[in-house]
Length: 225
Image (cartoon, rainbow, N blue to C red; front, side):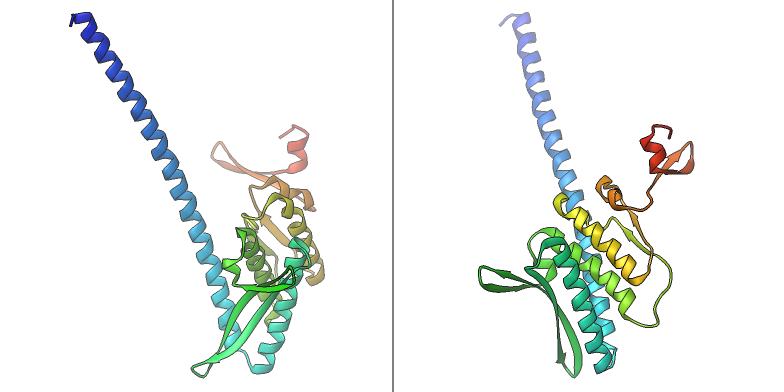
């Protein structure tokens, strides 16, 4: 084999190795992205489970009458949210029972499908949207059901992050109706442009030259931001 042939073989081997490295690097980056997504979703689910646990504790420490009243109010509000967003086939139920002499609470999303009644725990319901709407409505219910009532706005960070695009506007309409019903301002912090469509006021917050700027969305739309 001549020197030029050896160099050609070497170049070919280097090119092949580089191609293989690029493929593996792309695969590694994709796996890392999926890992980060899974970790973020796990953290969200932990927060939602923590919310369910807080509701359980509040129900457990209430008197029997107050517990039943709170149960009915929370069932009604969460059912309204689910039906507002997903349709009349959905409802929310809280099952109260005693375990070891202490009251316990379990949460269920109930759907009617082809003549059958299906009861599932929110975190096991189809798609991430159902558990997102359930936990969102429970947050509203916790603030409005238990006394003394807390004043001030309700601030929601990335609400309905896993709700399908077709259900985003119904979710916004539910939040608006809840805000009007309870006379409470609701502030959404989001990267989802669809959520601002139903807002009374919207602002873009950005970091510019080391300073935080708050810009009304109307200024951005006019191209003057």
